[in-house]
View (cartoon, rainbow, N blue to C red):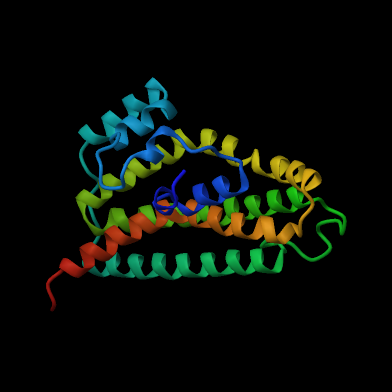
Length: 222
């Protein structure tokens, strides 16, 4: 795999490749500017036919009615503040190697790196799911078009959650096996991977907030 191809990978994929958990796929050899599979083609293996029907129905349904400009602005600011707070708290917890929401004695002193990693994943689940729902509510208040995106995000979250959880839940056991086979300072392995996973989990929220900021920038100045 070339260095240039690696640089175009998302942070979590780069970490998995560096640790040997993932292998370069056929797409990695394609120049970054070249054509590739569409979003729909990439999602297809992850979606059941019932999910596809639900998504198609959401696209055909009437968009939810937006809120007032004041409601939309308040919801947008609150979502942005909440995102910054959640990201900061979870990142600080990773740096302390103490999962958010746990006390120092909630995990045994001899807990394996994989067990500690799983506890961080559970903290991300607890904090990011409500944050994502809050971002959807802010979208729905902004405009009918963004409200439709909020509906689609809710359906995609539901459709993809089980597959994503299955893949991410394999990391703790793999980390334990890796560190038993190749001893290394556990935090040097787990911390970069946890930060990359945090960024990955926040991507849907960040995408919705970017849409909100774009909409706000287009609003006429009073």
